Length: 364
Image (tube, rainbow, N blue to C red; front, side, top):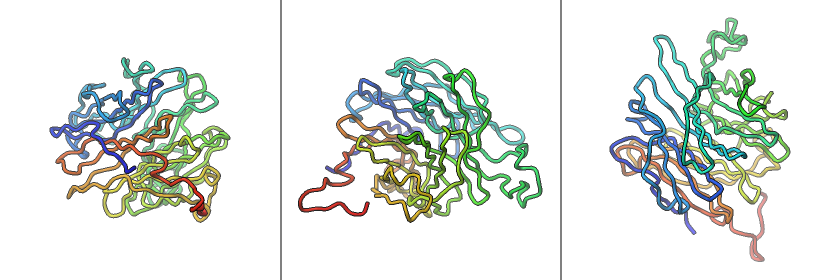
């Protein structure tokens, strides 16, 4: 069976992008996304929500979760999560441009387990943009992760590096997180997840392995085709290793998770000279802790290609049903003047055929 494609939301009067998705206990799909004037003009940006009761084949009319913003104060890149106690959380960054610089606060809406009613936003004073999904670890710890430019007030920035920092990294993007062990009543100090003078590190996707190890997959934002990078934590997010390469080359905005069969799927934008492809990579759990690229294998499957003369594609969310069907949401332009939200459905056998008497499994 080939990948099936569906329109999640298409409104040719406005730009729709940066979607995420969650599946409720009843099997309903809920998708959140931004609408605004353009990727580079966030006037009228607001968070929108739509639902599907038929596994993503049809979707309800979109409805707003927030008020429209302005070009200099706007909501950016919502993510949606469902906690074990049934609380649904939408997190989105409020970016405000000031006379000098900008601030970026995290806004949170709280909803019921089926996403019928939301309250908020609550404002958390965490500085960072493009948050990861709010993560609830097996220990009950809650993680909120976002990235920002290195700050001149950081202790590690004091010095005379070539860019003003002690390590020459002033102005480079860094990945941060905060954690809570009391369900969000109090939060830790900021944790630096990834900072490297070679890289612009951002847009993390954190995956908790079955043994409790955390793997953070990172976008490198120099636009020169660097691999999706990764970092590991062995203490539930309090400290992190240096960054390592992965075999997912030219990767932007990874979104990682476990499939029902134990494989790890990472959806990401493939960008090498232009953003026009969406891929899904499938990795082995027993190789996630490997630090050498050559010791990590994966299968990479194309999800979509943006045919538009000025393509704009590449933020995803995904879920899997109990019977194995995988559903991905993504944005692209394709035959439209402005971006819209598309859904993709496929099954594990579309990734890899089962082993039979006539076939053998390869080294992967």
